[in-house]
Length: 270
Length: 270
Image 1 (cartoon, chains in turn red, brown):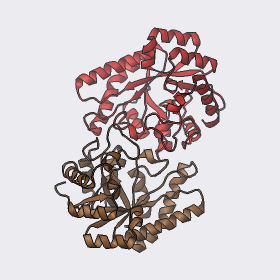
Image 2: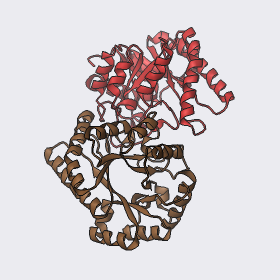
Image 3: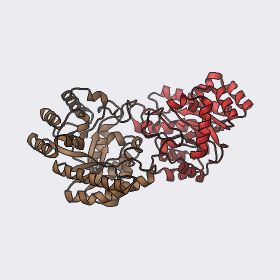
């Protein structure tokens, strides 16, 4: 990228910072967007979050996260639905256009039924989101998270779900870490055209230091990030480009230094 | 399964045993097949391996492994080819009908080019294998190994390669650990009909204790093994069913106890 005008910082990338520190850091480094996590919003409260966004001028690109639809009991399904409605409300309140959906892992050892539950859960949530003016972004996760985080493991599956509903409030969030390995990634990004609600960057380090918290900084791994960014651009996406890195080593860096490194790599490797 | 008549033990499942111990263990537990690794064959020598197989009556179902086709230089590509020819020769010598191909990770940070190199490598090796009467079994690995072990990450890709060559000496090896997450697994197993050269069982534990060595014993995870076994059976596969588990905890068990546990789980969960 030739500027940081579209740079968004996912809050988990600076896990040790609360929202006030994150927003101050972004002001200092002239970073325009953040993606907020619900547990961090809860720490300082929704009203305070809204106030701080307004006073700093930093925009919330998205809220993480809704989803986790598969559940064994209908009671749990109803609870999940209610939690997802609150997530939609929070996304609306902070002015984030998008609620990221991590769809949930396997319930009751049945991956096929769990996939159906995801579709049923989206069907139930979508009218509420449409009413609130919040877009739902289905983020397919890497297949290594199929059991415990998302039975939706490919753009192909996510696109299939989106085409079922044909709503302008339902689309995909594309994270390079989750989709880079897919031989169909080019055609599936093109297929998502008009329904791409987010683009996340980071890298795949070899060997992976940790399944959950071993993502790399852009440029440190094997993902052809620029090619994927071009594909997403060709498909018409012009929104924020979010840096989402879960990495123990980076979390130990001073936050401002990490933001500076992110900017440098964003300009060089995205 | 209602008997162990098709049970094969992949040698890595009992990593601490050399070939003589493995074969003795299989004789004691009346297990008919083994899958041998080339480094273990090298330890005692090819002739000794052949003699021991003959004297114990245990059959070698397959040899692990050939492949690793992508390489940056043509010199390295030629070396890989020569190594693969030796692997074919060893498979022929021990009477294994199948050489398992782990196709190799990314060369030079270019996954697309690396995928092409796999096809080129198979094209080069296939006539040699046909001449030797050894089948080449392309084993797609889980996408989390795309960078460093196999750019071929799905049955769909493997089937595509096989259909390119239309040789009865080229097929797929299906390992439940590598393919269970795939929404297309049922249709792709059917598509592989007539070209299934191996079926491997184990399980996906939640959470995964280790990327490489955290596979589970059948029944301990979330994979619907019996359903996959039925799909493979419907597709016409009647060969050995191989237990391939890389797991630090199981490696610490006494070998005979582990073989007994494998038999128990094979009858119950496969």
